[in-house]
Image (tube, rainbow, N blue to C red; front, top):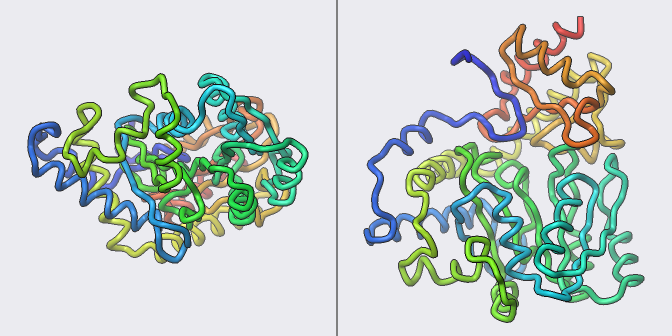
Length: 365
C-alpha cells in the first residue's frame, strides 16, 4: 500500500496531519482528570458551531454530545432513546440508510411505517404530509440528509416543517453531510454526525445534537440498551462523569479536525465542497458519465455517485491498480452499477478531484 495513495471514498476520508498529531498526545484518564472534562465541554461547544445549533437555523438551542462509537451507534441510540414498544415511527426513505432505520425501530418494539420514493429521487414534503394524513398519528419520523450510496442530498426544511406542525419528533442521519454542507439542525430533534466523514477525523466517534423536547421524551422511554442510550449524556459533561470510559485519543483528533474547519470558516468550507462537486460532475459529463440521481439539483456536494451499469467493480480496480486512487462502488443492489467519488472533508479540493478524474479518464480510454 503506497503512502501516495489518494483515497477519494465517501468516508472514511483522509485524516490531515494535525489531526494525526493530536491523537499522538499523551492519553489522559478521561474518568478521573478534571482537565479532560473541561476539554470535552470545549469540544462540544465547537461542535455546536459546526451544527449551527440555535443560531440562524432557527429553533431552540441543541445540546451536542459525543459518543464513543462509529456513526451507526448514533442512529441506533437515537431510535433506542426515543422509541418504545408500540410507538409509531414514519421512516422516510429514498435509499439504503433510510430503509435501515426500520430495523432499529422494530428492534426496539416500535411500529415502522415506511414512506419511500425511488432511489434516484429525493424526499418531498408534500408526500410526507400525505403519508401522515393517510397513516394517522406518528410519534417519531426518521430520515437521511445525504444518502451516500446514491449521492443524493435531501432538502429537509419543508419536511421538517410538516413534522413540526404535526408534533412529530425528528431523527436525521446527517453523517455524510455535517461539516460539508448546511444542515437544518435547528429544526431537528436528534441530528447525527460522525467523525470519519466531512470532519476528516478517524472512525470511532458519533456526534448528536439533541433538542430539549427530545431530552424530555427520553425520560418516558424505557431504553433496554446501556451503550445505545443518549439520556445519560444529557448531564455527563456538567456533572463530570461519562457513562463509559471515553475514547480520549479519538476526541483529541476530532477536536483538531473541528479546529481546522472553524479556522477555515464554515462558509468557505461549504463553498469548497460545492466547487469540488461541480468539478467532479463536469469532468464526469466530459467522459459521458451521468450522476445516479435523476436531477443534478439533487446531487450531494460531498459525494458523487455515477451510473456505470455493470462496470463499477472493474473501474474501481483499474483506477486503483493503474493510478493508486481508491474509489467506492455502490452498496446493496447497486454494488456494480454505481461508482462513488467522495469529495468530502479534507478531500473536497479541486486538485484532488482533477487527479481522480484524470485517472478515471485514462482507464475509460
